[in-house]
Length: 261
Image (cartoon, rainbow, N blue to C red; front, side, top):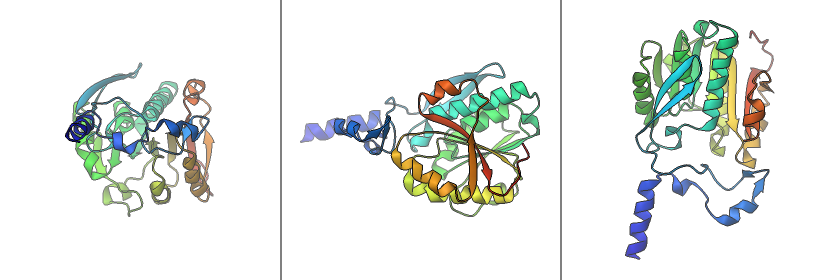
């Protein structure tokens, strides 16, 4: 028994998130086109603790330094949907030079802050990068690593709670969210926060990128459709590539509000 406990401790040190996953080989039978209903966090490389990644989004953001750390939770590492959304906003800036420079931006459920950091690098007027309190030190570290302190702030935002002063007075033009659909109890809270944000910024463009992992993810969209319409972003040439990995990039629009973008 002592040997088993020592081995468990060793594995926990290598991969702090391993208990959030269902590694039972039998879970493979509970899938729908590769989407499982039996896990919360997808498989990842072990030992993601206080590491530095160098990412590139040519040509406008040739280098972005990203501190990643799974210790505060699964948000502390970079997930694929964040990179897809980051590449897309770079593409928009390439097609419409100066587009980002006119935008005040909010990133929801930011984790490392990747997408918000890219927006700041593209010249956004002001970026508020939000997540829960345990992830704020990581976001602040990444803001400093990329020297965008003058354009960015990190702010606590717990979905479902009233908007803080920093968020409520933002008058955002662009709301960004990547990989925010993963935990079913949070679905109504996320929808409530999206409603609150678009009440304050009804003309904001809302770009939402997510990876389909569980059949239960469909319930998020059942809740969402009461308040929002959405469409696939169809002007991204990389769409056929990331679609094969069950990643979707969507544009949300509040029902009854005329788009200004």
